[in-house]
Length: 124
Image (cartoon, rainbow, N blue to C red; front, side, top):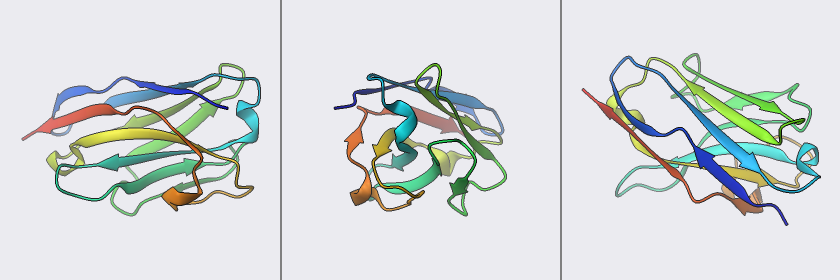
């Protein structure tokens, strides 16, 4: 069982930056593929970024590529999402998720554990 707690969300102006953190419980954090998803009001949850257990492989949605960076610190059981050049369309609740799947995946149904989410609001 893994518990995930996100933090770092907030209100920021367009063009600004935020850094989300996701702290995981348990001693097997390094065995999980980690991902970030987001859900805007009235829209389905969508993939944002994912990182392999070692951190050596990352994958991004086209909409955030070049602006967002996912990273992890297995010693601290934490995964991060650095978000730069934020746009109003990035406004959403951001969720951290953990997957026991052996390869990086963008499919939400392959993630086994989810955090409660953190709100990110980007004003124009």
